[in-house]
Length: 241
Image: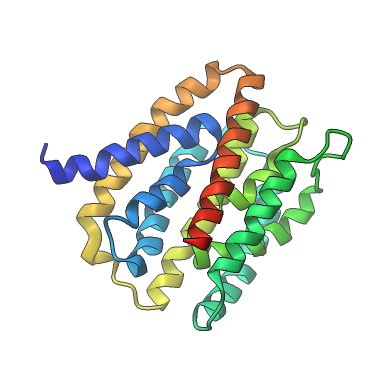
C-alpha cells in the first residue's frame, strides 16, 4: 500500500469509527483533515460524497432502529433547503456567523440547566430541521453538529440516535451531488481519492457499530455530549481563525 493510499484510508477509517460509536464528530473531523489535502473549493463536494456513502452504510446496518416519521418529514424539507442553499452560494453570505450561531445552539443544549425541558420537537417539525440542515450542508459542509442537539433526549436509544441521525445526514449529503453538479463541479477529477476515502469510512463504520452495540447507554451519552462540545469548539475556532 502506497503512502498516498494510507493518507486517504487511515483518516476515513478513524472518523467513520468515531461517528458510528459516538453518533457524531467523524464527519466534522474528516472535513477538517480534507482541508489540509484539497483546495478549499473542492472540499465540500468531495466530503459530501464520502459522507453520503458513510451514512448510507450506517443507516443500512442500523435500519431497524431508524425513526421513520422523523426521517420522512426531514426528507420533505430537504428540497426547500437545497434551493435556498444554492441561492445563498451565489451570494456573499457570512460562513463565520453561521458557525457561531450553531456553536451557541450546541453549547446551550449540552450545558443547559437540568430543570429546563429537553429539546423534544414533534416528528412533523423535523420538516423545518430538514430545510435548515440542507441549506447548511451546502454552505458549511458538515451538518452533524447542527442535528445532534435534536437527539439529546431520553426517549431515544443510542441505536435510534445513530441510525436516525445517519439517515438524515444521508439525505443532506445525497442532495449535495446534483447541487454541485448544477454548480459545475467535476467529480470525475477526484475518482481515485473518493474511492479510497469511501473504503476507509465503510471499514470504520463496520468496526464502530460493533462497539456501539456493546456500549453502556450512560457512557454513550457522555461520549456523545463530549463529541458535541468538541464540535462546537471546532466550529468556533474555524469561525475566528
